[in-house]
Image 1: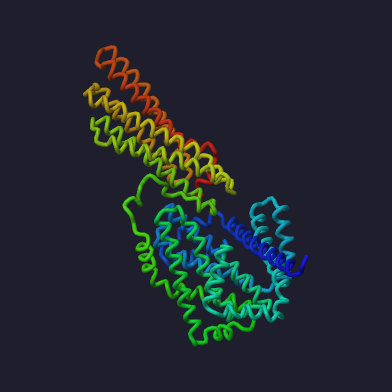
Image 2: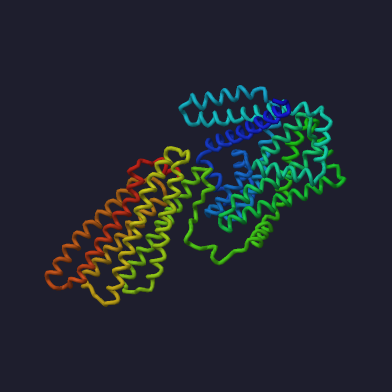
Length: 550
């Protein structure tokens, strides 16, 4: 095989190892962080500056600003973040992505084989999850440097090739350099990897900072492609995230490209500041560029939001309720967050079922049909959520979940079904109330009083169960109280049924009204059973730790 072909294959193999090592290290860090990501994301809601720090931290962990931005698209699409909060995270992601370059600029390739061996031993030899995570981090770092070494050793002879050097000198043209950086980053979907490869080229003596700096700028724009692709099919709010990301990166790139082109001696200043090591020059120049971008554009964050709202204006149908508010497939890269968001969507479904119960009971007791359409619309939404949440539960169940999260997801399958049944029984009450109202049928006062008492007690069981599910704090006393209340409902149904039979025998109640009364009791009892099951599903699966964590 010709040497040039072999060299191309070797460089390609080194690049593949480099990308895989970076991915493995990021996944290990993310898995080690686990549930802490939820707390990290909660910081974002406090203020935009903390959002910047959060974006920096998350990107430093997962080793990809593109991945962070894709997650932000998912968070906005699922309602976890507002666009104004997402701006800070996007800015911080640009700083966080420089960590990879700083790591790569360290010349520690000699220990790469040791890191790979240690990582593999930890992965296959340890039973403890935290040691396995450490194995992925150490092994990934080792593979990353092995890939770097492979590329560097193969490319080093090009430093003596005048044709190759002349070719790379052409990259000093700002437009060509930015275009190549943009194109390469768009293809491999990682600006961190692009910077890493530039550092390899610099260490090999092929590339100088004068040539590489414009490719650094181009990589900043190229990383936007991933977010733009991710926003396809997302809500308009999520699409605005990709607009903000593109505007921020493009404006920053243009500003620094102009500064570099002007005879201000910016590149010479960087060389004097950093020293002669070209790999380190590229890494530190990237850090300075990204940090300065944030400092420069942070005061104009609201302007970026306004631009995004102008490019993708708000439409009337944008707030349509028949959609998932908290779930989006883009958040599956963070399983613990996916579990929490699923819980929020289930809670939303439960509150809709409670609302429909109240509307149906109110309609029956007050003999008023004004909310019939609202009840039907809510029931359609409940059925929609049942179907969509179940699909997401199936997908989430295939993720690499912590044991407690997997048990929690298992309970959600049952809970969603119970909530859907509450909605069905509430609809039943609405449906048999319509002819009762229209035909002006009547109950005895005793029957009305019994129904008022029973409907109030059933509502209490539903409210208590949803509150328990919402708070996610294990409380045996509250579980016992809900059980007792549900048993009281069962006893009331039995007592009121006996009372109804007596009224029928005495002629106080007509057979037609009596049948309606029995149906009402049956639906109320079933609603109470399903409400209690919400708590039972959590309790029976012994997931106290999971509940307390969320």
